[in-house]
Amino acid sequence: MLTSVELMDVPPQPILTVRVTATLEGLGAALGEALARVTNLALAAGAGAGAPVVRRLRRTPEQIEVLAGTCVPDPSRFAAGAEGEPRVERLPGGRVARALYTGAYRDLDKAHRELARWAREQGLEPAGPPWEIHTTGPTDVSDAASAKAQLYLPVRPAKAG
Image (cartoon, rainbow, N blue to C red; front, side, top):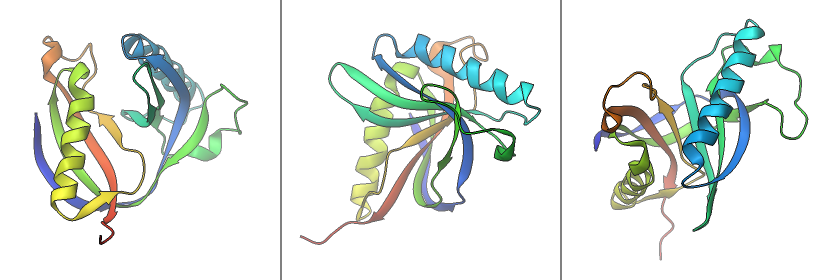
């Protein structure tokens, strides 16, 4: 369920990420492994690790490609990673539609579509791939339908016509 849907401006945010491509059924396990990897790397580098972040890049009926990572306050501690290795990326700054989500992980795609629909109703269109910052993880909640995340969709005014 989406609540507190609003427009806001956000600053760019550095994140330590790894690219993940998985089937929808295998996404949970792949994300768990990737998020543990980048969080451990951030902590080992003494950079601290923030909330888990998932940026949805592409989706086909068979697969989804995402950046899985963690917010890092000091990205200068990390060298450029080789292909497949964790590396520093940036969530874009600018105007976003943001919503708070509570529900099952399996329903996040539906929630992202709902946020995009809300943006279109406001005369806006997507300006880039959406992302989510998880405020609870699978081990933080006793009920899998009680996961919490902040969903972000970069937006711009819709083109006339």
